Amino acid sequence: MIAIQEFIYLLVNLFRLILQIIYHTCENAYNNLFGIKEKDVTKDIVLITGTGHGIGKELAMQYALLGATVVCLDINQQSNEETANEIRKIKKNSQNTVYAYQCDITNREEVFKVAHKIMKEVGDVSILINNAGIMPCHTFLDHTPNEITQIFNLNVIAHIWMLQAFLPGMLRKNSGHIVAISSIAGLAGLPNIVPYSGSKCAVAGLMEALNYELVQNNKGNSSIKFTTIYPFMVDTGLCKKPKLNNRLSIALLSPKKVAAQIIKAQRRNIREMSIPTFWFYVAALIKFLPEKSIVCIRNFFDCGVDPVD
Image 1 (tube, rainbow, N blue to C red):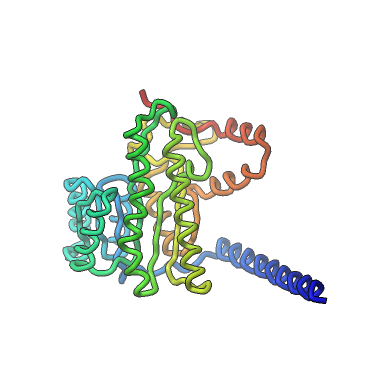
Image 2 (spheres, one colour):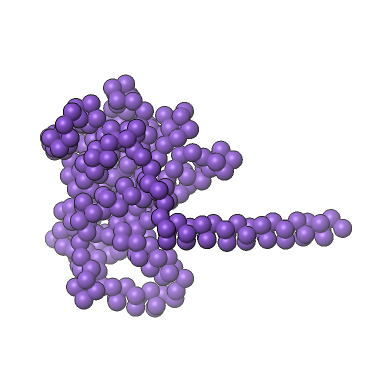
């Protein structure tokens, strides 16, 4: 009798799960077709790492133009101040809406020191964007031990230090948004950037695990949002020898356009997104295919990076 009751209970819960999946799938399809209203960021304090150049700089500029208070964080003080000054020139009376701090985010002590300073001088960060990263391009055995350590320290460990420093403030207010920049290489490993691919896979796993931990701890209703972005190769100077497919019109992405897509994803609470979006679905598809089929797909796209001597 007990076994029958347990079986019926399992069937009921399975049926409920199927209905939930159908509902949320339809909801997601509707949102993709008709769009989601983008959140206002004028009252947000947005902290972005790696703002001295590239995507980070563009993110800082565009969030500032949207009316957010922007905190620029970079190890290079000169380029970071240049970004802040550019924002001040574009936005009059922006002296109190853009701040620049120098920090080696791979150093936990430095991160917590600057975090205390930011909270005192600016306020609680409501949007954290872990953007900074490096991508040395060599064959696996040509990577030096120091290089591999630097890749993981900046691309992964720094994310953890930043989260430990700024997540408590979000938890106190029960609101906030965390954005991490992974990579297409975090969805499908690429040759000549093996440690980099591993680091970007780690970023994706870190974001997913932390998101569900907060959801579980808040009984399914965490108010802190997560967004992981997987960009294709971006024209920031990291790709020294990009291997592109002209036949398919595959080209390096503009940092300005990528930043705009990242901000759009954050403002729409999109949890995961590739840039361009089709890469996410291609990467998901190949996971279910035989190895030889995957090789055929990779050969068809025929893009990546060549090693730097």
